[in-house]
Image (cartoon, rainbow, N blue to C red; front, side, top):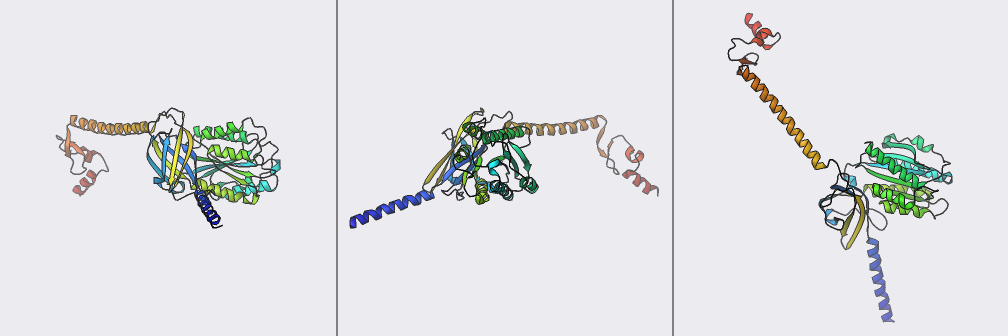
Amino acid sequence: MKNIALIYFLVLSVVSVLYAQEEQENTIRIESIDSHAFPQMKAYVSVEDQEGSPNLTLVKGNFSAKIDTENHLSSLAVETFNKIDDSIHYVFFLSASGLMDGQPLTAQKNALLDFSTLLGETDSLSAYIVGEQPEELFSYVLPPDLPSDAVLELEVREDQAKIFDTLVGCVRKIEKEQDAGILKKNERTVFILLSDGRDNESRFTLEQTAQVLSESGIPLYSLGLKVLSEASLSVLHELARKSGGSYLYTPDLDTVSDHLNQFAELINMSYVVSFRAKGVKADDSFHQLMIQVDDKELSIQGFRNFKAVKNPFPLWLKLVLLGTAVVLLALGILLMIFRRMSLRKKLGISKRKCPDCKRRMKDDWEFCPFCRYLPGKPGKKKKTEESA
């Protein structure tokens, strides 16, 4: 019996240690990668514990990164997003199909208004209704300007909820707005979808939509609302996972606002990992970024593809052109000065100056013509005083 009891306690101790280690285990998620200024790059990385809360104890020394399994980077820097001045453009997708009538739609509207109070001063917000195509409720508004009446007056629609078509259509819309300069290409953009996961015969499939989101670099954060059943909620989880976002199951409609607050914390408490890629050509092709976090006895890795954007005017060329313009301007100013000096020399004007008006005079002038013939000058006052 003693041996059995000893074995039991040993097994219990081992299980307790393994369980404690499992509880401490973190996960890493590369939300998005900004490579518009390639080879200078920036990645938004979220490190979360098993409960989904952000791990805020990490420093630069905990992070390392590689591109295409090789060490092609330099000058790595790490800081938390809430410590920098960058802004976020949030894009909300509300579900207003017939099944959302009543409490489900009311919970979404109230959650959106509550979420807007968490935004920073420079953050912007757009909202669309999931339908045949993205139906705009409002776009690019700052938190104080949010049209709360338009949100509260929102009613259910007869249109079929085509989640995939709506998401793809909004990605294309944002890409056009970036090309038009309405939205900066390097501004962080985040999609937030509230839905029960039911898609009614979209032209795009789940895989195509996930690919469009992934290639655009826009993460999708999705709340799975349990309206009738849970059967279709796996779609939302899959879209969030493949796009770099996060998913929360929300069976209780009273917790919609709380879950959105959790998303806000994950987004704003993410790490910004900045570095310069080395040895990777700007070829407009996709490459793989690996970011590794080593913390005590844990070592976790996250992977995400990015495009090595080929810029027609890279940063170094812009700096060269700017420097050249400054040098040419300085040379132009010097040339004008030398030409004026040369002209004065031809006219016989040296460094001799009038003692009254301080203008330059020719060496053979017996009097200053400026003081004599130009009224209202210092010389006139002098002459008036002498005549008096």
